[in-house]
Structure formats: C-alpha cells, structure tokens
Length: 196
Image 1 (cartoon, helix red, strand yellow):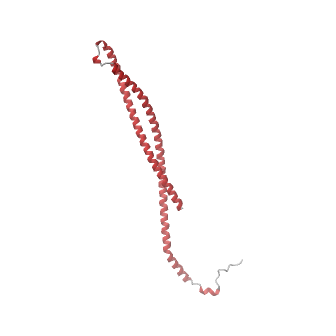
Image 2: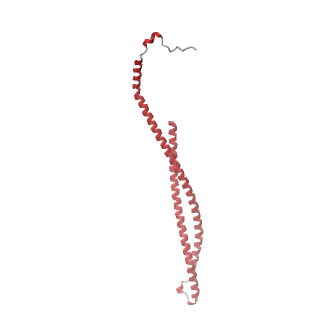
Image 3: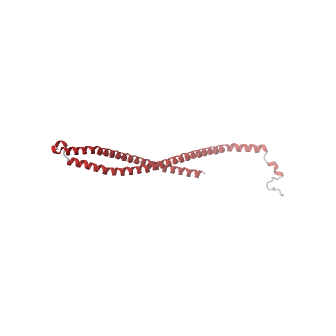
C-alpha cells in the first residue's frame, strides 16, 4: 500500500503555515462576514416556506370549493330533471283538463242560449223550464269545480315553471363558479409544480 504524498507540505515550509490561533481568527472573521448572507438566506427560506404554506392552504380551500360546487351541481341537475318531469305531467294534465272544461263551458253556453230565463217562460212550459233550471243548477257546481281545479293546476304549472327557471339560473351560476374554481385550481397546481 502506497501513501499519496501529493498534498504533503515539505518540511522546510512547515514554518510558513499559519498558527492555529491565526486560523481560528480567520475562520471567525469569515463566519462574521457570512452572517448577513446566512440571515438573508434564512429569511428567503422562511418567506418561501410561508408562501408554500399559503399555496397549500389555497389549494385545499379551492379543492374544497370545487367539491362543494360539484355536489351542488349534482343536486341542481337532479332537481331540474324532477321539475322537468313535473312540468310535463302538469302540462299534459292541463291539456286534458282544458278540453274537458271547454266541453262543459260549451254545454253551459248552449243551455243559456237555448233556454229563455225562467221568468219569461210561458205557463204551459213551466215544467220544462223547471227541469232545465234543475239540470242547469245541477251542472253549475261541477262546471265551477272543474274550472277551480283547472285554475289550481294552471297555478301549479306556473309555480313549477317558475321554480324550474330559478333552478336553471342557479345551475348556470353554479356552472360559472365551478368553472372559475377549476381554473383557479389548475393555476394553483401549475404554480406549485413550477415551485417544486
């Protein structure tokens, strides 16, 4: 085994080497000179750590917001689908009831035109007039009931359409917020990737 002597100092130059105290003072001086650099590096490190922490928190908050908006979107889509079905059913019922009520109204109108008022009737036709008045009286509550039911269903249809419109507006607002949140999340992820 051969010892590497390439960095060895010749014996005649041993006196030119600095003393231990000189070396100590030199190192102490270098440490004092480097203190501002170390402090600056520590400050930069602390700043970067704080920024990384803020970025992580923003990522967490944004991801949470995206998750909440996606959940809300699912609920809105479900509510819209239910309201569309309800609107179709109400519209079909309305169309069916409108035909029935229009027939009843046509019968009532015919009765009014075909039969003179009871006061003006001739005496020999009193029985027929009474019979017609009874029929008319018996059919009026049904007609009014059908008209009332039709009005209620029309109101239900109007309310359903209004709720559907409100849900669609909320869904559009939700979609815009979701798109913005996803975009922000993508930007934050890109920043984190660059910093990593």
